[in-house]
Image 1 (cartoon, chains in turn blue, brown):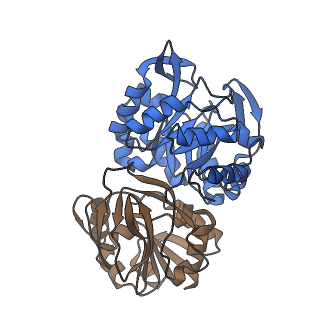
Image 2 (tube, each protein chain N blue to C red):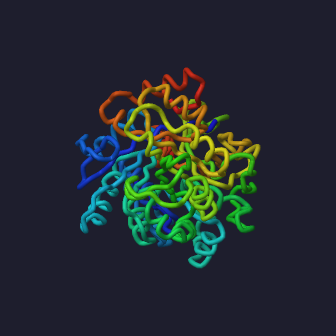
Image 3 (cartoon, chains in turn cyan, yellow):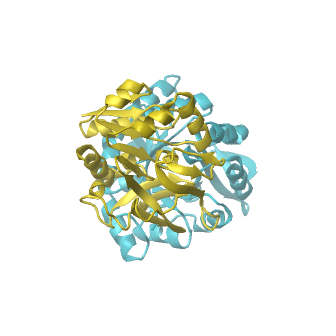
Length: 251
Length: 194
């Protein structure tokens, strides 16, 4: 039986792991390769590495890091952060990344989703969508959730799916860093509407939140960062709990 | 142990090389006939589209070479599908090692089938040490039908399909052993030890 995936997300800056509360305050939580290896051993189903470095050296250091990760880790991983061209994707996939995720660059130039999917296959193109409730309407935000767009999240999600995205990584900016549970409403809405998997992100605080996002939110995968980095919820415990609650997971 | 990983226009072969290196094998990515012929093991990886891959193989006569090889051979993902008779993906005639049809998943659930799924009905030395609690990582939109003699494990997503196939020296796996944690490492180790 296909299982629900648990995905730790490692935010990377200058080669180190960081995670902010509501993306503002950054805290150091270690070496990404080492942390990734530990997560893989503990039973993480996939990893996401999100590079938030903003220097010109970024691309080269990211490719080097991806090479190190690929040499060490025996589960799939996705790389995101500032990817905007087919060449960026090619370099990262050749270094050993399984998937790449794009966000602002897709909003800026939607046809890049078609181009990347055509060149590398939908299976490795994840479109990340940061969404926030603005006066009762779910609007797509870019630049780490700081910049609102006029795109309605549901329509944008359908569009990227039609353009060839293989998965959607949906982050609710209203829930991110707050630890009060995932955005089950919109996650369920997108998961029911689209023919591709939805990875829910933002809001994990307790093990019950994961159960809710898989059952109520109909998510295919759930992503979290700080609760894993600071060992608030160990992955083996989380999986045992979900199994006990009747959620199919890989043990 | 020399392992030749067949070089063609398939995505993410680097991970296969790294996984083999972690297991202590001497792996190289190559499309050279002699190197492939003389290797102790041959791995045919894959991710991509069937007709493009077949055209690429034919242009380099790698299709003939693959059909002639005698050493243990492992097709992975698209590699499994190309070893079958025919794929519905752009109506592509394939290599015909396994008399099996490759079909597109029906649209009853999300496609591609992405994620971890368990192996069922295991029967092969390749799967020694594993049971039905073993999970493998899948990413695919097409599946190989079950063959009464050659299917050595099945998986279920909407329907039952061939998770692994085996005929003579040819083995094939739909999931990615190089991405399937300790279960995948076990399968690769068994393959190297055949």
